[in-house]
Image (cartoon, rainbow, N blue to C red; front, side, top):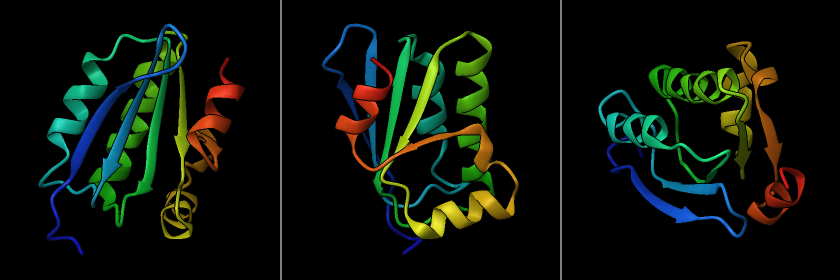
Length: 115
């Protein structure tokens, strides 16, 4: 599982100012730099991270998710997490960072909420 690569699909959202990053694979210290670069380069008002196919996240990956939240929140932009597995949700709870995020079951749910 952790040996899988992390792939990131960068998709324009349906609404102006909306981006979707669809991640597939684990988010690990060894592969999160591309993810961090895409988040930092993103200037859209609304960013949706589709984590439906994220199989595992280590502590550095959780740190990268918190970093994405901080980057967007301080600029008044929104960040939504989609398709978070029970395993990832538990890791966010245990590390006491779950309250930073807005969770949605699907991309369309997140798009409706951040509209």
